[in-house]
Image (cartoon, helix red, strand yellow):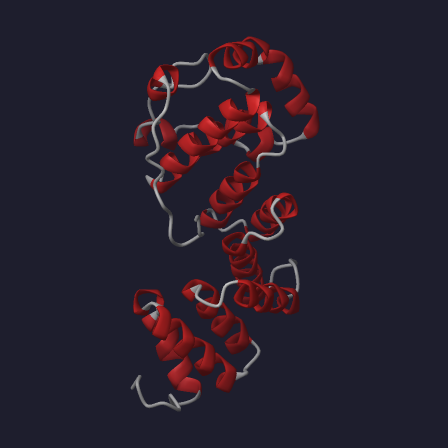
Amino acid sequence: MRQLLYFFIITSGFSTIAQTDAVPLASNRPLSKKETAHLDSQDVRYLPLFGSKKILQEQLVKNADFISQCETNFTTKADASKFFAERGWEYLGEGLLDTATYRFNLAYLLDTENMDVFWGLGSISYQKNNFEQSAALLRKGLQLSPDNVALMVDVATVQIACFKEKRDCNDIDDALSLLEKSVKMDSTNANAWLKYSIAEFQLEHFDKAWEYLHRCRALDLSFVDLNFVQELIAKKEDPMGMFK
């Protein structure tokens, strides 16, 4: 399970070529902080999905040898795409956002229907506070995996952030719909209940916010955001008297 605020590092085993990441155009090492600081922001390798459909087509031609070697060294292009997406999640978990973006882009070249590509790139956009772009990418991923509860919660998380920042993004009512669906599908998802609470708080439904926060607490106390608790207390005291 991947979540915007709780990343899990993938540690599954890979083949020899996968272990070294030794495929043309896929660097063996993450960018150093100095390299990242001087990175040209318009380098298409570090733009989600290479920035545009036109540039994507150019990359398909430019990376023909890369794709061919992946077909040789992996069982299928989908397997190769899965590998690069997993590397993308690893680098994302380490905070190496540009390196992660490039890996997800390579994964996309190999399989345009790899849900993890959109989830990963959407998570990166969220970390860069580009909420509108994040929502668009995550929604593409959700179209490919419509019953993915964790991804539903991430889409809702971005929409709540958009609402709080007054950005032109998807409506918070849609976030509430996704969260309602997510807890119906998995009532044990503590993160979903937390985000459901936060969404209701934004609409000043404080009784519901407390109810859902306590459901989160009962499932997994580690998910409770104490800063949010203080905001909620300032609006209405805890009906259960557990938080002061």
